[in-house]
Amino acid sequence: MSLDRQAQQIFADRLKGVQAQTYAYICALLMNPRDAGDVLQQTNLVLWQKAHLYDPEKPFAAWAYRFARFQCMAFLKKRKRDRLVFNDDFIARVSGEFEGDDTSETQLKALEQCMQSLPEKQRALVEAKYYRNEAVADIAEKIGKTPNTLSALLYRIRNALGKCISERLAAKANDSFF
Image (tube, rainbow, N blue to C red; front, side, top):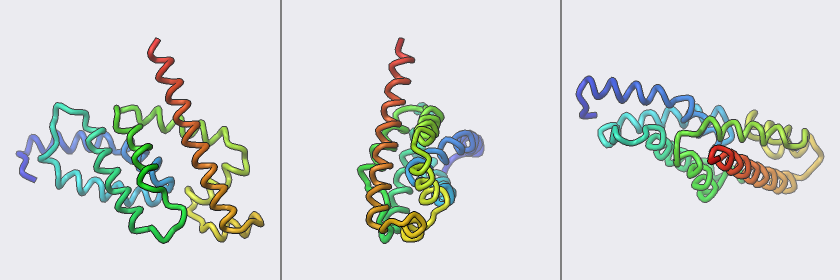
């Protein structure tokens, strides 16, 4: 990094200030808090390496999200053997929602609300797969379904969550417009 001491401190303060938001953003993309912690560390490393490229006139969080998105995509490429990895289009769509402005708290709240609106059985499946990182085969066996059936069900749940989040954000944007 070729920043002077004062610029380094300013950069460090801004980076520290967006840690929770960036972590939430990465969680939204990966749906796994343990993986998100690892990717956040890698993102922070890259941000420090690229600190000299940051324009202090621009929102820091949006800049950090771009690097976090690329780190998520790299992480997911390494995990391609897992059939339930999100594709690049999904990552781009979700990340686009975050990168537009600094409303990640609103987005995280929308995700939480959408999770709560899921039927209990669907919510339990999402939590088992994405929060506790249980294998699809293990979950499928517990609920008496085939892994392919469970994968299809999780796909439909993710789509429903994506739609719900988009609708809540659109409604929130319309409310704040007036």
